[in-house]
Image 1: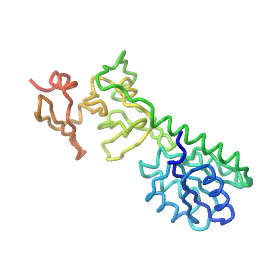
Image 2 (image 1 turned 120 degrees about the vertical axis):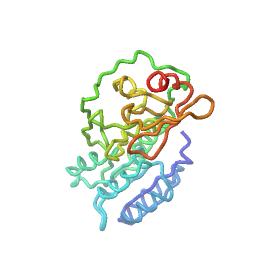
Image 3 (image 1 turned 90 degrees about the horizontal axis):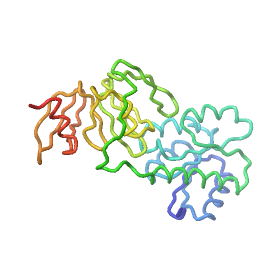
Image 4 (image 1 turned 120 degrees about the horizontal axis):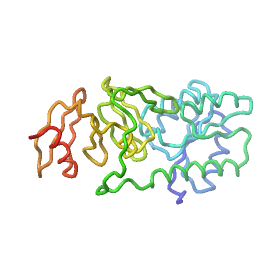
Length: 260
């Protein structure tokens, strides 16, 4: 792993601690950015889009819990490793941090070796997720066996918080690399760590159809279908502005169901 290109953001209000962490990480050839409070940290995170964030829990103004909660509302920060800095007296609060989406924690005072090991481990896991191969475009799904019905309810884990969703309320599901976005009739969008091919195997095939390597739609939510270029089609779904082009690979399936 080429750590020279990895950007790390430190959010820590105590100057000596902030400087100490910065020196350790820069000595290991990381590109380091630092903020002295939560508000500046959030702004800096949006500007630089770091590969990893280290954040103190107890700070004036916004706490570390509030920082992670605000950042995790944006999809781009859902997969970025987040490490809390915690005094030993605050260890009982870490459960709350983990529930908000934190990946790890470092207790103060800390050793340089432990800090670097934690950072390296989290970056390696993040790198593995980003580099994991996606399903080939020409590969047909094997052994599809639906495990849900239209009337079932399921848990969707969002930021370590399960959401109860009715299968029939799902309009479409869009792949986001190792994650997927579930769009609901209510307008809510839920980002969860689940591959599109896993959804395809689980959802009832008489209701949900994969129309692209990265998209599954609810057939009951189709408003209209129009012919498109090169024998493909465009699907307009109810309650959603985005339209979807059906690739030629899946065009025959939509024709069988709706087009004479």
